[in-house]
Image 1 (spheres, one colour):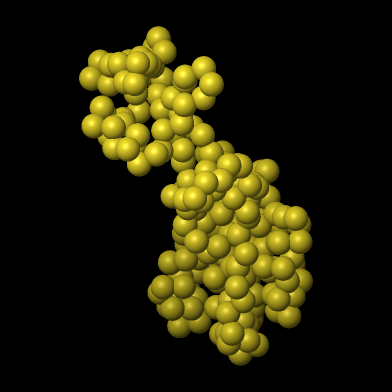
Image 2 (cartoon, helix red, strand yellow; image 1 turned 180 degrees about the horizontal axis):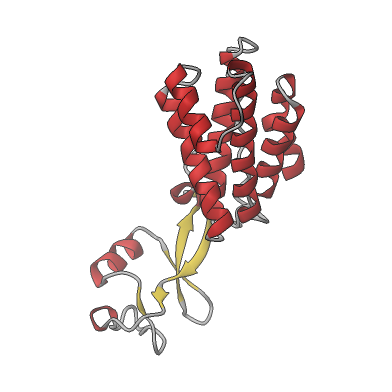
Length: 219
């Protein structure tokens, strides 16, 4: 279950800070059902981690905005530029979730994996554990890939798009796109997909694309 997954993936951080571990676990648990909330929790995770490092290195400095604190920690050498870039990336994507209502599962999962990477880094930096903790992602079925063939888990998606593009309106395998829609791909690409066994024909003859989980969520 996802709740167990979040606790398993971030539980080791209780050694550092229980709130940090809870934020990571919450972000992980929300990826599938509430990706926007997950992205906000990931930003809060980075903010909490920044505060933990800040308190250890700047005990007498007044609190500053998150982006300034991350930059100051980079300048002091408390975090290197590569790790600092990860802090900033989560901060910026989390801001988008708050202000632009971003709610992509892909982005939410990417942020959670980045937070997990940062958690492992902090465990090592504080000399608590040099052995990286593995991350267990949501299952393909949890992510909506509920079918399986020899190439892996997949879901069926529309081969057309809601746009009138004359160059992509033609007969393929005896079918035209519905009114007001066009094929998503050129004739040549559709032929390639068909030869690869990627086009599914449902009982009514409607054409659908097999989209594999590993294409969107690489391990």
